[in-house]
Length: 65
Image 1 (cartoon, rainbow, N blue to C red):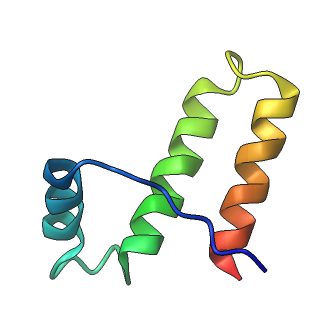
Image 2: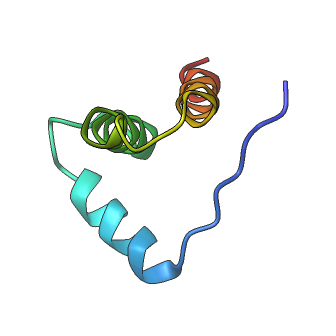
């Protein structure tokens, strides 16, 4: 299976590392990203097309494997 890669700028990556560090809510950066994407889907679901929602859900599922 292909490992999906997401490119983010270093400042945002540093913020994510800091948020995850010593935070019992997240077991890893992957958990942080999964929660963020789920929240976006919940908040923006009316603005996304069905194809977009499906693509995002498939991406999240690959992260969980």
